[in-house]
Image (tube, rainbow, N blue to C red; front, side, top):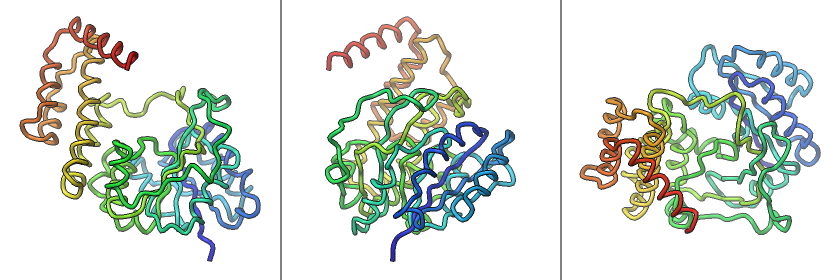
Length: 332
């Protein structure tokens, strides 16, 4: 029996971008893929004309496009979770509402699905585009083929040892086995902005993970609609969320060397953004930020000490530190 794919688009107030995303997917639904794909729009109670556009596509592509809408705005991660739970496919590919698929992306996707590898999750690479999603901003080797860009790791331990990083941060390009998502622990992460990353840590811990380095995602690297994550913890929100995943998943399930790799990755990012924000003259001393750090970091951690010292430094010193780090990165 051929496996079915759901392309799920969690969306909120990006009706014009949503149309572009849908128009990148639907022309590819020809044989042999037309009977194996559904497109699910999961609307997080948008207040623009998203509903009208979604119903237009649902009518034009009856039996292929489905539209669901939350009764109220439940937040990004809860909408992602709702999209996956509402899917009918055995596999679910997440696609951001302001991104799109490259031409012939489905050929690459199904080459992974039909590879007879019993994987729990797969990651597909993105290619950066301009703010209108019209022109690529980085070159990609024309010699890449679907045959030589797939990598399978036995589990998350092998994946992290090879990649030295968390699963990808971009939601577009995540493909999960729906039943694996339903079995994973999700509730702890529904109030974050990165449920896809944190649940992935649960799934790939003891499941095969596939990676495809042939870019299939058109990634809009700058959206004119602005950043949706500007809360009182910005720009640390995402990294504090990763520390939450560290506390609930990595610390309890992964080997010591892998815990150190991922923990350092997060704390280096927090330290860098502390320097960068302070260098801009922004006041970073926030009781909530410090409380979150204290709650999530390892006790007596040297990186935590570094962050606390940075928070006390004057902007002039942070500007010097930022210049030194930037120069070091340029020469390394």
